[in-house]
Amino acid sequence: MRRYSLIFVLLLLSLAVGEEKIPTVSAENLSKSTISIEADYVNYAGENQYVKASGNVVVVRGNSKYNANSTTVNFEQKNMQITDGFTFERGNQRVYGTAMDYDYGRNIGKGQDVNMMLHNNRIKGKNVLINDDVIIIDDASQTTCPYGDNPCNHVTSKRLTIYPEWGDVVNDHSVIYFYFVPIMYVPNNVSDMSGGMSSMFSAIPQLGYNQVEGNFAKSGFSYYVNEKLTGTVDMHYLENYGLRSGFTNNYKLDQANRGQVRLHYLMGEDAGFSYGLQHRTLLGVPHRDRTQIIDDFFAGIMPPSNSTYPEFVLDAAHREMSDYQFISYLPKASLFLPHYNVFNTGIKYTFTAFAADILEEDIWYPLYSQTREEFTDDMEAHKREYIQQNWEGSIYRNFNLDWAGTLTPGAIYSNSAYYDKSSNRLDGNWTRLMYYANYRKQLSIFDFSAGYKYTPDESGVSRFSGETFKAGTAEENNIGLGVQVLPWLKLNYMQYYSITEHEMREKTYGGELTVCHWLITYSWSDYYQQSTFGIRLL
Image 1: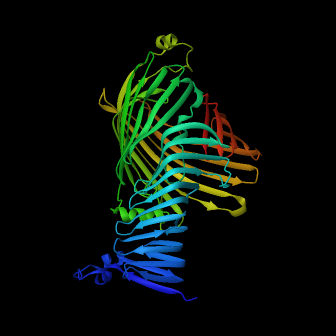
Image 2: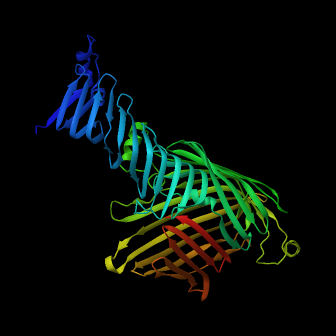
Image 3: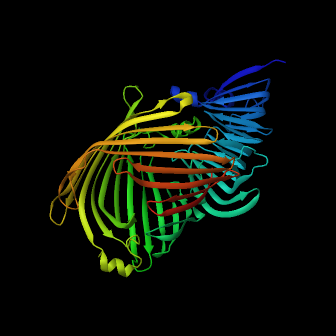
């Protein structure tokens, strides 16, 4: 058997189909118009306008590669057809299918009966469209279960769309299955390309209790307008306040600029609207065209994020609930630096800072009283507006101790200042230096962690009393233990103890139940008197 290897330059083929004048092209355009075909047999047809190749066919155009048993290339229409199985490779990504129609003039591929892996998700579909800036799979099914033929969980979608430029995966008209039993329908879901589908399961109510909201149930139904506009319709029931409804809308301008707009209405005695705007800008992100972006996607490179680029954040908010207060930002500006390596020594540092005009309004806090009337009489709610500036720098080093676990020592230095707007004076400030060390060791059934904090210096002016203080030294330790009781059940415990005050600060208890890649979690906090129950798919 003779094996042929041919390289076809579409520019030169114009001589074979007519008397057209050869245009002048750059080297870049020449490489894009080149197709390489390698096969056991190659036959010409139609006055060399067609090429039929069979037997271990390999077709390469640019950084795209097709493997097939046979293929037909039409040079006049710039089209390639594969009808008996193919593998499409680009970077680290592979797509398998039974048939492919590839328009290499427009760089658009259409495949049938496709199968691909997107990080930890196995995806199958009836049809696939591969374009420069989008991948669309019709009648898709995806699962995180390694048993692809008989998955214990899977999600079907009328259409699954991957946007490499934005790092998003969109599922339209999705049905979630547990052991082939449908349990939930989601009109739209937007997740990231890491394979997580947390927003899909936000429709499952998160249940819990805390002293401010009482018993609560919170859920959000995601929606999709286009690749730049997504969000959730939020429905919350709060025992102490009533219903809270509204939307959280996420927008994208480009890879470096994105943000969120929130609008909610709280019913009950504290009825009123709350709203917020947050805009985030990654600093120093290089401009790339869409071809480069999708090349990065196929190479397994995620879109830029604040883990690699500094991020500037601008917040504006009105009467949004935070901890035990209604908070308004008028506005707040923040800067976050990623974790930088110091001269490849393994030592890393990071820095954060913000400045904000803040309006606080006390809300009913049941820890101090049993009724709202008692709270109103004994602790009259009040508002206070102030300007706060804060910055914090930290440095740390991770040590891998092999069989002994991991150890992370570090230090944090921070400074804060408060300026009262009613008196127009400095209301309080303090500085703090803290050293810490965290240790972790994971065994077959045990997950052990321990930490130590030492604060040799904390001083300033109290914003509550206006008195100068020097806190002196403070020590605290924490211990955590996770026990894998059964292959599908893990129990967790964490405690924080003040060595200086000889007092237990906090205890948390929890459990993780894993059933067919579904993770059911429960946690309880002694300090906050709060419990949380949640469900998500791993």
